[in-house]
Image 1 (cartoon, rainbow over the protein chains, first blue to last red):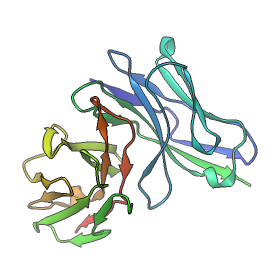
Image 2 (spheres, each protein chain N blue to C red; image 1 turned 120 degrees about the vertical axis):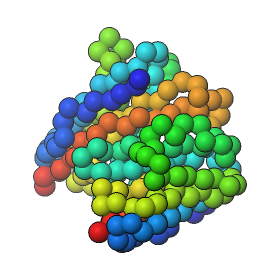
Image 3 (cartoon, rainbow over the protein chains, first blue to last red; image 1 turned 45 degrees about the vertical axis):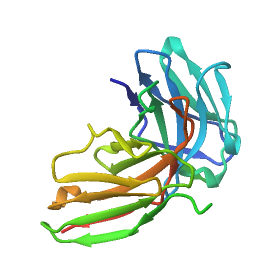
Image 4 (cartoon, rainbow over the protein chains, first blue to last red; image 1 turned 30 degrees about the vertical axis):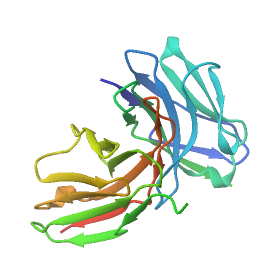
Amino acid sequence: AQSVTQPDIHITVSEGASLELRCNYSYGATPYLFWYVQSPGQGLQLLLKYFSGDTLVQGIKGFEAEFKRSQSSFNLRKPSVHWSDAAEYFCAVGSTGGGNKLTFGTGTQLKVEL
Amino acid sequence: DAGVIQSPRHEVTEMGQEVTLRCKPISGHNSLFWYRQTMMRGLELLIYFNNNVPIDDSGMPEDRFSAKMPNASFSTLKIQPSEPRDSAVYFCASSLNSQGRNEKLFFGSGTQLSVL
């Protein structure tokens, strides 16, 4: 069965600092990987996705993520965090076939200090 | 497009009552998902549909939960009877499934359910 682990429940960074959110997945084949962001009281919004090809993927709002098969990781990064990035971030893995079922991690709550 | 529309936004009910959550997916999308979000368990996939057909309902907690998708523009999630442990935010999401792959899920704003 596929699964996702986000080891950091809460992270606090200063505005302008760099950010890395960790994500490890478990899946028997090449996974489809996603990062979603959730603002308070809202549904989730897709930041970026990886299906194949270049292992460094660019997303919206200046985010990027790197797929490392050897480490089963798909960490999210941003070189300079803005106060508006404060939100909860979810990593997800999708199965191939069968309609592509998405399994989400438990999320990382990001706080940005001004 | 108005996006995925869920109703109601908030629902407060008493234990034992029937609860019906509604979802209108984005027009043209052929996959629909119901998720439940709690602090303890995070986001859990309850059930998803492809072309109005339930594909995987293994996440539905028990027989008290049922979901239907009578047509491409409407789905319901029903809990009968409801229990306090059902209190959570329920999200509906839709996607265009192309070549067996859901490239991007669009989420509704959720229904905050409180069962007293």
